[in-house]
Image (cartoon, rainbow, N blue to C red; front, top):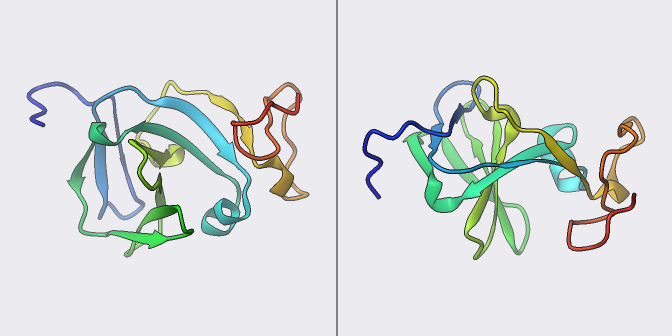
Length: 142
């Protein structure tokens, strides 16, 4: 799809710049995921926004590598600097993007916290923040 002269909604990159991308469409507010896989890949919980797959455009992707992290999803990271960048559910028309990889101010807020059943004991979630025991397909805990 040609982008024309439309300015991107957001831009982002890995730490070393070997992976650079633009988003040309709306971004969902960020979700903080506390599942064990996100904690292992990031060293903390992972906060991610999301866009339609067709709205994500590569400026540079020579460092991009994909890791099959489960039977139903894969994670994208930079093979040069190790930055954790993306999470993509198979057969889904959306891709999650590490919110911290976006350049500059995002205008996003945190929707809430998912997989809090797996959160580490050192993490305190602010009172009033929406929380889900697992994913958002179930009722929130608060």
